[in-house]
Structures are given as structure tokens and as C-alpha cells.
Image 1: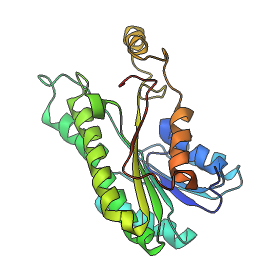
Image 2: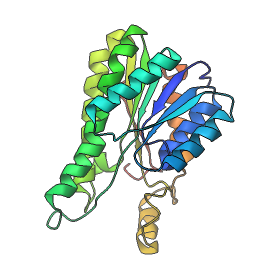
Image 3: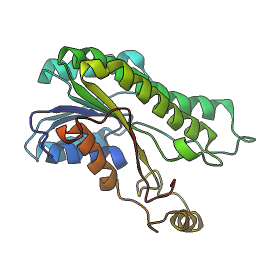
Image 4: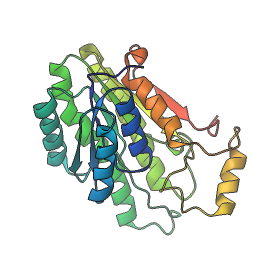
Length: 247
């Protein structure tokens, strides 16, 4: 896979799966911009790691739910680098609880952050990608968006919504050579999942045919494939990377 000369944006790229995606794209020769919500130090560290690979990088403090900020970020990237070739919508949060105990704020926060952010950045990327007559949008969903999960009705709904949005977007933009696909991770070892106790972790492993958790790089390698020309005839697809969990 060769991404030399490609300009990419990864939302939520300062840690976890987003950081892994950003570094993998950079290793393949792409210039990579990232957004982050809070930790400027973590974002700056990722930028340094990317630049050490001999490509360009920049970070933007941006709340993914802010519609106008998404357009500002993408306009700055296009203004500085000339184009946006790859958009990876990765930003997301969890606020898990059983439906009987879930309050309205937990529902609204997760739906807005995980789903509206996809709309914000995908819409902002559409015009520059149309002008360039091509692009790849890759949205990070989850296997729970396919199978559901007790205690995660808000998260599951947001991730299922991403799948429906992506398929619609892919149909609308295919004639302009803009592709859109979904990567649906299973249980991946990140900061977000690191708080789970050993009993829960063991149960997840038992439910996974490959018998282990995934690594962030196992997600970012699939994202890199979808960003590259090797996937030029793939659009509107959902690729599960879950060790067989949702099989």
C-alpha cells in the first residue's frame, strides 16, 4: 500500500485507535492531520511522531460535535496542503448504562458525539473531494452497531447509525469517485477499554472465536487498505475486525 502524496484527516487522532490510524497512514507516506478534544500534549506528541516519519502533520483542537468547526478544520487543511484525499471519522465516546438507569444526557452526549460528528466532517469534506474528483471516507463504527449490546443502547444506536449514514453517503457520492466505507472493530486494547475488569475481559475473550483481544494496528491496517488504491472498487461496505465476535 502506497499513500505517498495523499492528505488525510483523522478525527480523535491523539490516542487509541485514532493514534494508531494516524501513524499507520503516515508510515505509508501520507500527510496526516488530526483533531483532538482536550489533551494538547498528547496531540503534539502524535504530530511529532508523524513528522519524524518524513511527512507533514498538524493538529486541531476541535469538538467533533461543532458543525462550523468541522468546516474550518477541513478548509485549513485544503488551504495548506491543496486537497483532502482521505477522511477517517474516528472520534467517539461511551457512557454505558442499562436503559432503566440511563439518563437523557448520557443518550444525547453519545449520539451527538458519535453520530453527528460523522455528518459534520463528511459534509465538510464533500465539496473539496468533489473538486478533486475523488476521495475516501472511512467511518469507525463497532460490532455492537451490528449486534447490539446490553448496557450500551446509546453507543449501539450511534454506531448503527454510522452504518446507515455511510451507505447513503456512498450511494450519493459514488458518481463523483468518492468512496465511503465502515470499519467495525470488536474488542480492541485501548485506553477506552482498559478500565474493564478482568471478569469482563475474560468473558469477551470467550465470546471471540480467535480467543483474544485485538490490537489497534489491526484496525489501522484495514483503514489504510480502504484509504489506498487497493480498495478502489469497494464502497458502502462494512468490514468487521472483531476476531469473529459478531459472526
